[in-house]
Length: 479
Ligand code: HEC
Ligand SMILES: [Cu+2]
Image (cartoon, rainbow, N blue to C red; front, side, top):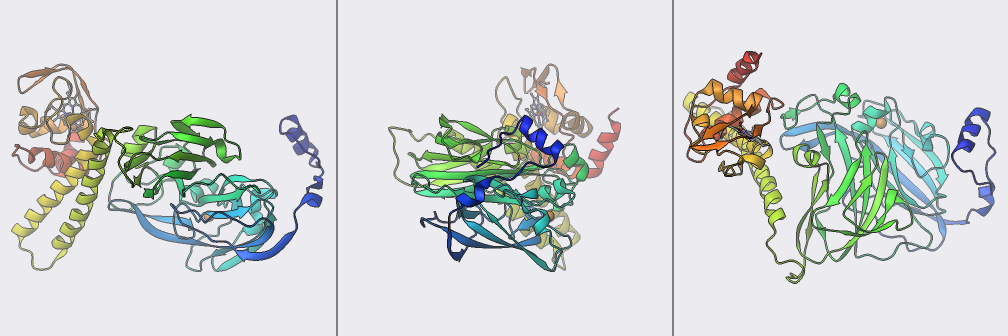
Protein backbone atom coordinates (compact mmCIF):
# COMPACT_ATOMS: atom_id res chain seq x y z
CA UNK A 1 0.00 0.00 0.00
CA UNK A 2 1.41 3.38 -0.98
CA UNK A 3 0.84 6.00 1.62
CA UNK A 4 1.19 9.65 0.75
CA UNK A 5 1.82 12.43 3.16
CA UNK A 6 0.23 15.74 2.29
CA UNK A 7 2.86 18.47 2.00
CA UNK A 8 5.14 18.63 -0.97
CA UNK A 9 3.81 15.29 -2.16
CA UNK A 10 0.39 16.80 -2.64
CA UNK A 11 1.79 19.65 -4.69
CA UNK A 12 3.77 17.18 -6.77
CA UNK A 13 0.56 15.29 -7.42
CA UNK A 14 -1.29 18.30 -8.73
CA UNK A 15 1.52 19.47 -10.92
CA UNK A 16 2.19 15.99 -12.28
CA UNK A 17 -1.53 15.31 -12.57
CA UNK A 18 -0.83 11.68 -11.84
CA UNK A 19 0.01 9.97 -8.63
CA UNK A 20 -0.78 6.30 -8.91
CA UNK A 21 -3.47 4.79 -6.73
CA UNK A 22 -2.62 2.71 -3.73
CA UNK A 23 -3.08 -1.03 -3.47
CA UNK A 24 -5.83 -0.45 -0.90
CA UNK A 25 -8.23 -2.58 -2.97
CA UNK A 26 -6.56 -5.85 -2.05
CA UNK A 27 -6.92 -5.11 1.69
CA UNK A 28 -10.65 -4.45 1.51
CA UNK A 29 -12.80 -6.64 3.71
CA UNK A 30 -15.30 -8.94 2.02
CA UNK A 31 -18.82 -7.51 1.78
CA UNK A 32 -21.43 -9.86 3.21
CA UNK A 33 -25.16 -9.25 2.75
CA UNK A 34 -26.88 -5.87 2.63
CA UNK A 35 -29.03 -3.61 4.76
CA UNK A 36 -30.79 -0.26 4.53
CA UNK A 37 -29.24 2.50 6.65
CA UNK A 38 -31.27 3.84 9.56
CA UNK A 39 -31.27 7.65 9.15
CA UNK A 40 -32.11 10.01 12.02
CA UNK A 41 -32.81 13.70 12.57
CA UNK A 42 -30.93 15.67 15.27
CA UNK A 43 -30.73 15.14 18.21
CA UNK A 44 -30.95 11.41 17.52
CA UNK A 45 -28.15 9.14 16.35
CA UNK A 46 -28.74 5.75 14.67
CA UNK A 47 -28.00 2.82 17.02
CA UNK A 48 -24.41 1.56 17.32
CA UNK A 49 -23.52 -1.07 14.73
CA UNK A 50 -22.95 -4.45 16.36
CA UNK A 51 -22.10 -6.52 13.29
CA UNK A 52 -18.50 -7.65 12.95
CA UNK A 53 -18.25 -7.81 9.14
CA UNK A 54 -18.50 -5.38 6.23
CA UNK A 55 -21.81 -5.16 4.43
CA UNK A 56 -23.50 -3.25 1.63
CA UNK A 57 -25.36 -0.34 3.21
CA UNK A 58 -28.09 1.27 1.13
CA UNK A 59 -28.68 4.97 1.89
CA UNK A 60 -31.83 6.63 0.55
CA UNK A 61 -31.64 10.38 1.06
CA UNK A 62 -34.14 12.89 -0.33
CA UNK A 63 -33.40 16.58 -0.83
CA UNK A 64 -36.33 18.79 0.16
CA UNK A 65 -36.63 22.57 -0.16
CA UNK A 66 -38.96 23.47 2.70
CA UNK A 67 -40.17 26.59 4.53
CA UNK A 68 -39.64 26.13 8.27
CA UNK A 69 -39.22 28.08 11.48
CA UNK A 70 -35.87 29.83 11.95
CA UNK A 71 -36.83 31.74 15.13
CA UNK A 72 -40.02 32.95 16.84
CA UNK A 73 -42.13 34.47 14.08
CA UNK A 74 -39.38 34.02 11.47
CA UNK A 75 -39.44 31.45 8.66
CA UNK A 76 -36.91 30.57 5.98
CA UNK A 77 -36.81 28.32 2.92
CA UNK A 78 -34.26 25.72 3.96
CA UNK A 79 -32.68 23.36 1.46
CA UNK A 80 -32.35 20.09 3.35
CA UNK A 81 -31.01 16.59 3.22
CA UNK A 82 -34.11 14.75 4.44
CA UNK A 83 -36.42 17.61 5.49
CA UNK A 84 -34.51 19.13 8.42
CA UNK A 85 -31.38 21.10 9.21
CA UNK A 86 -28.96 19.57 9.97
CA UNK A 87 -29.49 16.70 7.51
CA UNK A 88 -30.04 13.06 8.42
CA UNK A 89 -27.32 11.38 10.47
CA UNK A 90 -25.82 8.40 8.60
CA UNK A 91 -23.97 5.63 10.45
CA UNK A 92 -21.87 2.97 8.75
CA UNK A 93 -18.97 0.71 9.74
CA UNK A 94 -15.37 0.98 8.58
CA UNK A 95 -14.97 -1.12 5.41
CA UNK A 96 -18.66 -1.04 4.44
CA UNK A 97 -19.69 -0.52 0.84
CA UNK A 98 -22.24 2.27 0.66
CA UNK A 99 -24.77 2.37 -2.17
CA UNK A 100 -25.99 5.96 -2.11
CA UNK A 101 -29.28 7.06 -3.65
CA UNK A 102 -29.78 10.83 -3.74
CA UNK A 103 -33.28 11.92 -4.77
CA UNK A 104 -34.25 15.49 -5.57
CA UNK A 105 -37.97 16.02 -4.89
CA UNK A 106 -40.01 17.04 -7.94
CA UNK A 107 -41.29 20.21 -6.20
CA UNK A 108 -37.75 21.50 -5.62
CA UNK A 109 -36.49 24.38 -7.74
CA UNK A 110 -32.78 23.60 -8.02
CA UNK A 111 -30.36 20.81 -8.78
CA UNK A 112 -28.33 19.49 -5.82
CA UNK A 113 -25.60 16.94 -5.10
CA UNK A 114 -23.63 15.61 -2.14
CA UNK A 115 -19.96 15.75 -1.16
CA UNK A 116 -19.29 13.39 1.76
CA UNK A 117 -15.98 13.99 3.54
CA UNK A 118 -15.97 10.24 4.29
CA UNK A 119 -15.60 9.42 0.58
CA UNK A 120 -12.20 8.79 -0.96
CA UNK A 121 -12.70 9.80 -4.57
CA UNK A 122 -13.05 12.94 -6.70
CA UNK A 123 -15.33 15.56 -5.25
CA UNK A 124 -16.36 13.25 -2.43
CA UNK A 125 -19.17 12.08 -4.70
CA UNK A 126 -20.23 15.52 -5.89
CA UNK A 127 -20.15 14.99 -9.66
CA UNK A 128 -21.58 11.46 -9.47
CA UNK A 129 -24.51 12.62 -7.38
CA UNK A 130 -25.52 15.76 -9.30
CA UNK A 131 -29.32 15.47 -9.47
CA UNK A 132 -31.98 17.64 -11.12
CA UNK A 133 -35.40 18.15 -9.49
CA UNK A 134 -37.56 15.07 -10.03
CA UNK A 135 -34.50 12.84 -10.51
CA UNK A 136 -32.58 10.31 -8.43
CA UNK A 137 -28.88 9.42 -8.70
CA UNK A 138 -26.94 6.42 -7.49
CA UNK A 139 -23.23 5.97 -6.73
CA UNK A 140 -21.25 3.66 -4.46
CA UNK A 141 -18.18 4.03 -2.27
CA UNK A 142 -16.19 2.16 0.36
CA UNK A 143 -15.66 3.85 3.68
CA UNK A 144 -11.95 3.31 4.20
CA UNK A 145 -11.39 5.69 7.13
CA UNK A 146 -13.23 5.64 10.44
CA UNK A 147 -14.27 8.95 12.01
CA UNK A 148 -17.03 11.54 12.10
CA UNK A 149 -17.41 13.35 8.79
CA UNK A 150 -19.43 16.28 7.49
CA UNK A 151 -21.34 15.95 4.26
CA UNK A 152 -22.74 18.90 2.31
CA UNK A 153 -24.12 19.97 -1.02
CA UNK A 154 -21.46 21.09 -3.48
CA UNK A 155 -23.60 22.56 -6.26
CA UNK A 156 -22.71 26.09 -7.37
CA UNK A 157 -22.89 28.50 -5.70
CA UNK A 158 -21.65 26.07 -3.05
CA UNK A 159 -21.62 28.64 -0.24
CA UNK A 160 -25.27 29.42 -0.87
CA UNK A 161 -26.33 25.77 -0.81
CA UNK A 162 -24.48 25.23 2.46
CA UNK A 163 -25.78 28.51 3.92
CA UNK A 164 -29.32 27.31 3.18
CA UNK A 165 -28.81 24.28 5.41
CA UNK A 166 -27.41 21.58 3.13
CA UNK A 167 -25.18 19.64 5.53
CA UNK A 168 -25.19 16.76 7.96
CA UNK A 169 -22.93 14.11 9.51
CA UNK A 170 -21.86 10.60 8.57
CA UNK A 171 -20.18 8.53 11.24
CA UNK A 172 -17.88 5.76 10.09
CA UNK A 173 -17.70 3.59 13.18
CA UNK A 174 -14.26 2.04 13.72
CA UNK A 175 -14.07 -1.78 13.29
CA UNK A 176 -13.40 -2.13 17.00
CA UNK A 177 -16.35 0.13 17.92
CA UNK A 178 -16.40 2.92 20.51
CA UNK A 179 -16.44 2.60 24.31
CA UNK A 180 -20.03 2.14 25.43
CA UNK A 181 -22.00 5.17 26.62
CA UNK A 182 -25.62 5.35 27.79
CA UNK A 183 -26.77 7.92 25.26
CA UNK A 184 -25.57 9.37 22.00
CA UNK A 185 -26.70 12.68 20.52
CA UNK A 186 -26.32 14.68 17.34
CA UNK A 187 -25.75 18.46 17.41
CA UNK A 188 -24.69 20.58 14.45
CA UNK A 189 -24.17 24.30 14.25
CA UNK A 190 -24.80 26.48 11.23
CA UNK A 191 -24.77 30.18 10.34
CA UNK A 192 -27.66 31.82 8.46
CA UNK A 193 -27.87 35.05 6.49
CA UNK A 194 -31.23 36.80 6.08
CA UNK A 195 -32.23 40.06 4.39
CA UNK A 196 -34.02 41.13 7.58
CA UNK A 197 -32.32 41.76 10.89
CA UNK A 198 -32.26 39.27 13.75
CA UNK A 199 -35.86 38.73 14.89
CA UNK A 200 -37.49 40.57 11.97
CA UNK A 201 -40.72 38.69 11.43
CA UNK A 202 -42.03 36.85 8.38
CA UNK A 203 -40.47 34.77 5.62
CA UNK A 204 -36.86 35.91 5.29
CA UNK A 205 -34.94 35.61 2.01
CA UNK A 206 -31.25 34.66 1.86
CA UNK A 207 -28.76 37.55 1.77
CA UNK A 208 -25.75 36.70 -0.37
CA UNK A 209 -23.95 39.93 0.49
CA UNK A 210 -24.05 39.19 4.23
CA UNK A 211 -22.86 35.64 3.52
CA UNK A 212 -19.89 36.90 1.50
CA UNK A 213 -19.10 39.41 4.25
CA UNK A 214 -19.35 36.53 6.79
CA UNK A 215 -21.86 38.51 8.84
CA UNK A 216 -24.50 35.99 9.89
CA UNK A 217 -27.90 37.09 11.15
CA UNK A 218 -28.47 33.77 12.95
CA UNK A 219 -26.15 31.12 14.37
CA UNK A 220 -28.13 28.07 15.40
CA UNK A 221 -28.12 24.41 16.29
CA UNK A 222 -30.91 22.19 17.45
CA UNK A 223 -29.83 20.66 20.74
CA UNK A 224 -30.61 17.34 22.39
CA UNK A 225 -33.25 17.74 25.05
CA UNK A 226 -32.88 14.72 27.24
CA UNK A 227 -29.87 12.91 28.54
CA UNK A 228 -28.74 10.91 31.51
CA UNK A 229 -25.60 9.30 32.90
CA UNK A 230 -22.78 8.88 30.46
CA UNK A 231 -23.44 10.77 27.26
CA UNK A 232 -21.67 10.99 23.92
CA UNK A 233 -22.40 13.87 21.60
CA UNK A 234 -21.52 13.90 17.90
CA UNK A 235 -20.90 17.55 17.12
CA UNK A 236 -20.73 19.01 13.64
CA UNK A 237 -20.34 22.46 12.15
CA UNK A 238 -21.89 23.07 8.74
CA UNK A 239 -20.67 26.64 8.59
CA UNK A 240 -20.46 27.90 5.91
CA UNK A 241 -18.30 30.53 7.59
CA UNK A 242 -17.94 30.42 11.36
CA UNK A 243 -15.80 28.26 13.63
CA UNK A 244 -17.66 26.98 16.68
CA UNK A 245 -16.36 27.17 20.25
CA UNK A 246 -18.51 24.28 21.42
CA UNK A 247 -19.32 24.43 25.13
CA UNK A 248 -21.93 23.04 27.49
CA UNK A 249 -22.55 25.39 30.43
CA UNK A 250 -21.98 23.44 33.63
CA UNK A 251 -20.34 20.36 32.09
CA UNK A 252 -16.80 19.23 31.43
CA UNK A 253 -16.01 16.84 28.60
CA UNK A 254 -14.20 13.79 29.97
CA UNK A 255 -13.04 12.82 26.49
CA UNK A 256 -12.80 14.73 23.23
CA UNK A 257 -12.11 13.10 19.89
CA UNK A 258 -10.82 16.27 18.33
CA UNK A 259 -11.84 17.00 14.74
CA UNK A 260 -13.97 13.85 14.75
CA UNK A 261 -11.00 11.48 14.64
CA UNK A 262 -10.77 8.08 16.27
CA UNK A 263 -8.34 8.87 19.10
CA UNK A 264 -9.16 10.55 22.36
CA UNK A 265 -7.12 13.70 21.91
CA UNK A 266 -7.74 15.35 25.25
CA UNK A 267 -9.40 14.84 28.65
CA UNK A 268 -11.19 17.35 30.91
CA UNK A 269 -12.07 19.91 28.28
CA UNK A 270 -14.31 22.96 28.81
CA UNK A 271 -14.64 24.17 25.20
CA UNK A 272 -13.63 22.40 22.00
CA UNK A 273 -13.10 24.07 18.66
CA UNK A 274 -15.14 22.72 15.75
CA UNK A 275 -14.02 24.14 12.41
CA UNK A 276 -16.45 24.96 9.59
CA UNK A 277 -17.00 21.72 7.70
CA UNK A 278 -15.59 19.78 10.65
CA UNK A 279 -16.67 17.78 13.65
CA UNK A 280 -15.81 16.51 17.13
CA UNK A 281 -17.03 13.78 19.43
CA UNK A 282 -17.37 14.66 23.10
CA UNK A 283 -18.11 12.29 25.98
CA UNK A 284 -19.10 13.29 29.48
CA UNK A 285 -20.73 11.91 32.58
CA UNK A 286 -23.67 13.76 34.07
CA UNK A 287 -23.84 13.94 37.84
CA UNK A 288 -26.36 16.67 38.63
CA UNK A 289 -29.86 16.90 37.12
CA UNK A 290 -31.12 20.12 35.51
CA UNK A 291 -31.19 22.03 32.27
CA UNK A 292 -27.82 22.42 30.61
CA UNK A 293 -27.38 25.04 27.95
CA UNK A 294 -25.29 24.26 24.89
CA UNK A 295 -23.59 27.28 23.35
CA UNK A 296 -21.08 28.49 20.86
CA UNK A 297 -18.96 30.30 23.46
CA UNK A 298 -18.56 33.21 21.08
CA UNK A 299 -21.31 34.48 23.32
CA UNK A 300 -22.88 37.16 21.20
CA UNK A 301 -23.74 34.42 18.75
CA UNK A 302 -25.30 32.46 21.57
CA UNK A 303 -27.36 35.26 23.05
CA UNK A 304 -27.94 37.55 20.08
CA UNK A 305 -28.00 35.19 17.10
CA UNK A 306 -29.56 32.07 18.53
CA UNK A 307 -26.66 29.62 19.05
CA UNK A 308 -28.26 28.05 22.12
CA UNK A 309 -29.43 24.50 22.72
CA UNK A 310 -30.83 22.85 25.81
CA UNK A 311 -30.18 19.48 27.30
CA UNK A 312 -32.36 18.27 30.13
CA UNK A 313 -30.64 15.88 32.50
CA UNK A 314 -32.92 13.83 34.70
CA UNK A 315 -32.04 11.84 37.80
CA UNK A 316 -31.42 12.13 41.51
CA UNK A 317 -29.96 15.32 43.00
CA UNK A 318 -26.39 15.17 44.20
CA UNK A 319 -26.01 18.01 46.70
CA UNK A 320 -22.41 17.06 47.41
CA UNK A 321 -21.42 17.96 43.87
CA UNK A 322 -23.78 20.86 43.37
CA UNK A 323 -25.86 22.61 46.01
CA UNK A 324 -28.71 23.52 43.73
CA UNK A 325 -28.60 27.31 43.64
CA UNK A 326 -28.46 27.16 39.84
CA UNK A 327 -27.71 30.79 39.12
CA UNK A 328 -26.70 30.21 35.51
CA UNK A 329 -29.83 28.25 34.80
CA UNK A 330 -32.17 30.92 36.12
CA UNK A 331 -30.53 33.67 34.13
CA UNK A 332 -30.50 31.92 30.81
CA UNK A 333 -33.67 29.91 31.33
CA UNK A 334 -36.01 32.76 32.19
CA UNK A 335 -35.05 34.77 29.13
CA UNK A 336 -35.74 31.79 26.86
CA UNK A 337 -39.02 30.90 28.53
CA UNK A 338 -40.19 34.51 28.41
CA UNK A 339 -39.46 34.90 24.71
CA UNK A 340 -41.20 31.61 24.00
CA UNK A 341 -44.28 32.78 25.89
CA UNK A 342 -44.19 36.12 24.09
CA UNK A 343 -44.07 34.21 20.79
CA UNK A 344 -47.32 32.36 21.42
CA UNK A 345 -49.07 35.45 22.77
CA UNK A 346 -48.01 37.43 19.69
CA UNK A 347 -49.53 34.87 17.36
CA UNK A 348 -52.82 34.71 19.31
CA UNK A 349 -53.02 38.52 19.31
CA UNK A 350 -52.43 38.52 15.56
CA UNK A 351 -55.31 36.07 15.11
CA UNK A 352 -57.50 38.32 17.23
CA UNK A 353 -56.52 41.35 15.16
CA UNK A 354 -57.44 39.59 11.92
CA UNK A 355 -60.96 38.75 13.18
CA UNK A 356 -63.79 40.49 11.32
CA UNK A 357 -65.98 43.00 13.14
CA UNK A 358 -63.36 44.59 15.39
CA UNK A 359 -64.19 48.20 16.27
CA UNK A 360 -61.45 50.82 15.75
CA UNK A 361 -61.10 51.06 19.55
CA UNK A 362 -60.59 47.29 19.80
CA UNK A 363 -58.07 47.32 16.95
CA UNK A 364 -56.02 50.04 18.60
CA UNK A 365 -56.14 48.20 21.96
CA UNK A 366 -54.94 44.92 20.38
CA UNK A 367 -52.22 46.80 18.47
CA UNK A 368 -50.89 48.30 21.70
CA UNK A 369 -50.94 44.87 23.35
CA UNK A 370 -49.06 43.42 20.36
CA UNK A 371 -46.53 46.21 20.59
CA UNK A 372 -46.06 45.50 24.32
CA UNK A 373 -45.58 41.76 23.74
CA UNK A 374 -43.07 42.28 20.95
CA UNK A 375 -41.40 45.03 22.92
CA UNK A 376 -40.95 42.65 25.86
CA UNK A 377 -39.24 40.11 23.62
CA UNK A 378 -36.94 42.78 22.19
CA UNK A 379 -36.24 44.07 25.70
CA UNK A 380 -35.30 40.64 27.04
CA UNK A 381 -33.01 39.99 24.10
CA UNK A 382 -31.35 43.39 23.90
CA UNK A 383 -31.66 45.42 27.08
CA UNK A 384 -32.26 43.15 30.07
CA UNK A 385 -28.64 41.99 30.35
CA UNK A 386 -27.78 45.51 31.50
CA UNK A 387 -30.99 47.17 32.74
CA UNK A 388 -32.18 43.85 34.31
CA UNK A 389 -35.40 41.93 33.76
CA UNK A 390 -37.65 44.33 35.68
CA UNK A 391 -35.90 47.52 34.56
CA UNK A 392 -34.45 47.93 38.05
CA UNK A 393 -30.90 48.44 36.77
CA UNK A 394 -27.78 47.74 38.82
CA UNK A 395 -26.81 50.31 41.45
CA UNK A 396 -23.95 52.47 40.20
CA UNK A 397 -23.44 50.48 36.96
CA UNK A 398 -26.60 50.36 34.85
CA UNK A 399 -29.23 53.02 35.56
CA UNK A 400 -32.81 51.94 36.25
CA UNK A 401 -35.58 52.40 33.68
CA UNK A 402 -38.26 52.15 36.38
CA UNK A 403 -39.46 55.67 37.20
CA UNK A 404 -36.51 57.10 35.26
CA UNK A 405 -36.90 60.71 34.21
CA UNK A 406 -35.30 59.78 30.85
CA UNK A 407 -37.91 57.12 30.09
CA UNK A 408 -40.84 59.21 31.25
CA UNK A 409 -39.56 62.50 29.81
CA UNK A 410 -39.14 63.94 26.31
CA UNK A 411 -39.88 61.39 23.57
CA UNK A 412 -37.34 62.67 21.02
CA UNK A 413 -34.57 62.63 23.61
CA UNK A 414 -35.48 59.10 24.68
CA UNK A 415 -35.51 57.87 21.07
CA UNK A 416 -32.10 59.46 20.55
CA UNK A 417 -30.65 57.73 23.66
CA UNK A 418 -31.86 54.31 22.53
CA UNK A 419 -30.90 54.81 18.86
CA UNK A 420 -27.51 56.44 19.35
CA UNK A 421 -26.50 55.28 22.81
CA UNK A 422 -25.30 57.44 25.67
CA UNK A 423 -22.04 58.11 27.48
CA UNK A 424 -20.60 60.56 29.96
CA UNK A 425 -21.90 61.31 33.41
CA UNK A 426 -25.67 61.18 33.80
CA UNK A 427 -27.97 61.35 36.81
CA UNK A 428 -30.90 59.00 37.07
CA UNK A 429 -33.20 59.17 40.11
CA UNK A 430 -30.58 61.18 41.97
CA UNK A 431 -27.76 58.65 41.40
CA UNK A 432 -24.77 59.41 39.16
CA UNK A 433 -23.78 56.96 36.39
CA UNK A 434 -20.82 57.14 34.08
CA UNK A 435 -21.01 54.18 31.77
CA UNK A 436 -21.50 53.45 28.10
CA UNK A 437 -24.86 52.62 26.63
CA UNK A 438 -24.24 51.05 23.19
CA UNK A 439 -26.34 52.34 20.24
CA UNK A 440 -29.31 50.10 19.44
CA UNK A 441 -29.63 51.20 15.80
CA UNK A 442 -29.17 47.60 14.61
CA UNK A 443 -32.80 47.01 15.65
CA UNK A 444 -35.57 47.75 13.15
CA UNK A 445 -37.85 50.78 13.43
CA UNK A 446 -40.66 48.49 14.57
CA UNK A 447 -38.51 46.76 17.19
CA UNK A 448 -37.33 50.10 18.57
CA UNK A 449 -40.88 51.52 18.63
CA UNK A 450 -42.10 48.38 20.41
CA UNK A 451 -39.29 48.30 22.98
CA UNK A 452 -39.69 51.98 23.86
CA UNK A 453 -43.46 51.55 24.12
CA UNK A 454 -42.75 48.57 26.38
CA UNK A 455 -40.36 50.33 28.78
CA UNK A 456 -42.67 53.36 28.92
CA UNK A 457 -45.63 51.25 29.99
CA UNK A 458 -44.05 48.61 32.22
CA UNK A 459 -43.28 48.43 35.90
CA UNK A 460 -44.39 51.79 37.33
CA UNK A 461 -43.97 53.74 34.10
CA UNK A 462 -46.90 55.22 32.23
CA UNK A 463 -46.29 56.97 28.94
CA UNK A 464 -47.38 57.38 25.34
CA UNK A 465 -46.73 54.65 22.78
CA UNK A 466 -44.02 55.38 20.20
CA UNK A 467 -44.49 54.68 16.47
CA UNK A 468 -42.07 53.38 13.85
CA UNK A 469 -42.42 56.73 12.04
CA UNK A 470 -41.09 58.57 15.08
CA UNK A 471 -38.06 56.23 15.07
CA UNK A 472 -37.54 56.94 11.36
CA UNK A 473 -37.57 60.66 12.11
CA UNK A 474 -35.08 60.01 14.94
CA UNK A 475 -32.73 58.25 12.52
CA UNK A 476 -32.93 61.19 10.10
CA UNK A 477 -32.26 63.68 12.90
CA UNK A 478 -28.95 61.99 13.67
CA UNK A 479 -26.27 63.86 11.78
C1 HEC B 1 -24.41 46.99 27.56
C2 HEC B 1 -25.32 47.50 28.52
C3 HEC B 1 -26.59 48.21 28.03
C4 HEC B 1 -27.52 47.75 27.15
C5 HEC B 1 -27.50 46.43 26.38
C6 HEC B 1 -28.55 48.76 27.09
N1 HEC B 1 -28.23 49.81 27.90
FE1 HEC B 1 -29.34 51.48 28.24
N2 HEC B 1 -27.85 52.25 29.36
C7 HEC B 1 -26.68 51.61 29.72
C8 HEC B 1 -25.85 52.53 30.47
C9 HEC B 1 -24.49 52.19 31.06
C10 HEC B 1 -26.52 53.74 30.54
C11 HEC B 1 -26.03 55.03 31.19
C12 HEC B 1 -25.04 55.68 30.22
C13 HEC B 1 -24.17 56.75 30.88
O1 HEC B 1 -23.72 56.55 32.00
O2 HEC B 1 -23.95 57.79 30.22
C14 HEC B 1 -27.79 53.52 29.87
C15 HEC B 1 -28.80 54.47 29.74
C16 HEC B 1 -30.07 54.23 29.24
C17 HEC B 1 -31.18 55.15 29.32
C18 HEC B 1 -31.19 56.51 29.98
C19 HEC B 1 -31.03 56.37 31.48
C20 HEC B 1 -32.17 55.65 32.15
O3 HEC B 1 -31.88 54.76 33.00
O4 HEC B 1 -33.33 55.91 31.87
C21 HEC B 1 -32.25 54.54 28.70
C22 HEC B 1 -33.64 55.08 28.54
C23 HEC B 1 -31.78 53.25 28.22
N3 HEC B 1 -30.45 53.12 28.58
C24 HEC B 1 -32.56 52.34 27.52
C25 HEC B 1 -32.08 51.15 26.98
C26 HEC B 1 -32.86 50.29 26.12
C27 HEC B 1 -34.31 50.49 25.74
C28 HEC B 1 -32.05 49.25 25.77
C29 HEC B 1 -32.36 48.10 24.84
C30 HEC B 1 -32.92 48.41 23.54
C31 HEC B 1 -30.77 49.47 26.41
N4 HEC B 1 -30.83 50.64 27.12
C32 HEC B 1 -29.69 48.63 26.30
C33 HEC B 1 -26.35 50.31 29.39
C34 HEC B 1 -27.03 49.51 28.49
CU1 LIG C 1 -27.77 21.94 -2.95
